[in-house]
Length: 122
Length: 107
Image (cartoon, rainbow over all chains, first blue to last red; front, side, top):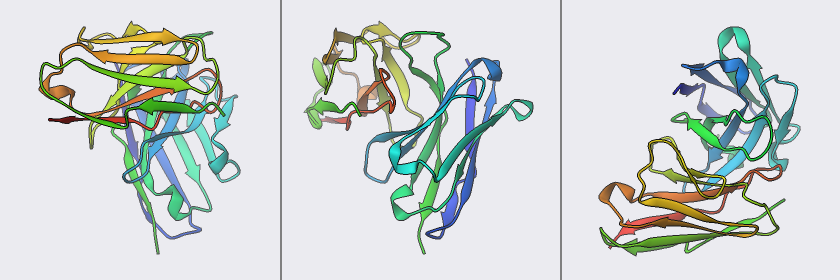
């Protein structure tokens, strides 16, 4: 039913930048929207961002607005999360997740990647 | 933003027990409520969508109910593989907030 594989995590200094990737396989990439969700150490899941199937509509949680940019590339079957001005509060495992293929009405996240760890520290 | 509050935050239970987790929304969300299971180091797994629909491949001992602001996830007979953290999530309005999680531990 499809696979999502995140990459690009690592150690970055405060104020630095990092770009995460999520490679998609096993289903038509262009038909689905995606989320980024993160989990800080010892904390719960936090919704971060949404990108629509077309890439035209994007949303962010307030804490990352103006610093994070979500995008997608059909040719690469991948989505990306560009993260700038990183702080210690951004330290987390970042998951990409597929949004259910429903045109209208309730949505859910039916396929998830295993996550990639981002550590912001000097 | 819609706040999602789960209770309890953690619970201890034995294999075979019936377990119920509740999730309350700070405003009405109709049935725009999903439940996920998460184990350390693994991808979260969708259990229930639209409050009461069982995701394909999920055992029938999992069930969900509720509408509006009050929702429940029930495990009818807890199995060893069910020890994990459970999250509710609303997708009624952006940001799609999660509850704080309920950790189910072995008694």
